[in-house]
Every structure is written in C-alpha cells, then in structure tokens.
Image (tube, rainbow, N blue to C red; front, side, top):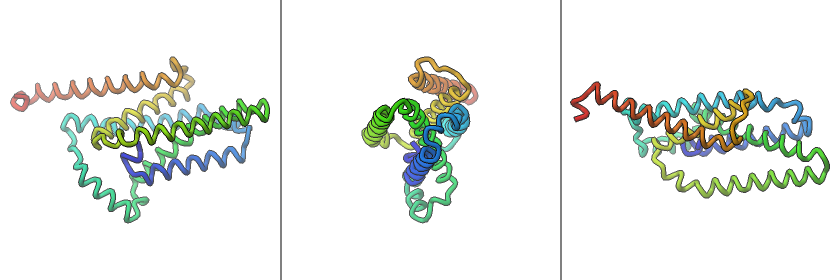
Length: 223
C-alpha cells in the first residue's frame, strides 16, 4: 500500500529497517523478549498511529468523492514523483511518512512472529527449529501473495487506491489498537474482515449522505 501510494523506496526502506530492528532486538534479548517487550503497549501505540494515518487518507478520499476536494491529475503526479525520487526524494516529508508507516507495520507483525517462535520454541531445541521453520514458511507465503496481487492492485486508479489504503490502514490500526487495550476480538484476526466491511459501509453512507445534502442545497445542479 505504501509503495503504490507514496514510493517503493520509502516502503522497502521502512520494511528493511523494521526487519533489521527486529533482528537486532531478537539477537540482543533472545527469549527474554517475551518478558521484556510489552506487546500490548506496542500494538496500542502503532494501532493509534495507523488509525490516525488511515483516517487522514480516508477523509481525503471521501472529500474527493463528494467533489469537495480536487481529484488528482494522476499522470502529472506520476511524472512529478519520478523526478522527485530521481533527485533525492528521501528528503520529502511524504517519504518519511511512508517509511514510518512501513516500518511500524513490519516491526509489529515481525515482533508477534518472534514472540510466537520464542514461546513455542522455549520447550526444546527441536521445538525452536520447528517454530522457526513455520515462521519462515509464513513469510514466504506472504511474499508470494504480495507478488500475486501486485499487478491487479496496481491497476486501481490512484484516487481509488488511496480510498482502499485508508480503509486498510484504519481497519488494521483499529484491530491492533483494540488488542492493545485488551479487547478480545470475535474470531481473532478474522475480525479484520468485519472491521473492513464496517468502515466501507460507513464511508459509503457518508458519501451518499453528502451527495444528497449537496443535491438539496443546490437543486439546480442536481437537475
């Protein structure tokens, strides 16, 4: 999502930094990471960040759908982004936003994996290697899925893409924020689907209500 909305450089840089920070933490703390790192607090903080970030994108997408914010000239934006990235786009604030978003998501998901592996693997050396093998297999499946959906995902127009990204980040942030507050979601992580559906429904109702309000305010335009 960050790669398509901001830049692949910021997305991959954030993912690499998140993975590196996680690896360093595991090497330094080892099994003690389960006791020393408050996973619920990390989920709460990153959940709040992603929710606020997602709401910002979702709000702009709704305003564009209502005609209250100008649609982007996507071809012009693409050309400008290429020039920006070629001339040191890493100094752009959007690069930093994308990097931080990618870093947070990769770090938190990786931290959950590390805690699971260390917890299941603490019983015996054999258990550790089996748990690690399962984690590596999971990573490979996720990477394969990313490549599989990359092209269809990339065909979505930018304005629609930002709406999708806003829904994704807001929903994921809500899930993590709830877990950080101690909320037990129905069906666990599968609740993400219901959260996504809820935000989609609320957004659609907001757009519909906004358009009806515009029609009543300007009946000559509606005609």
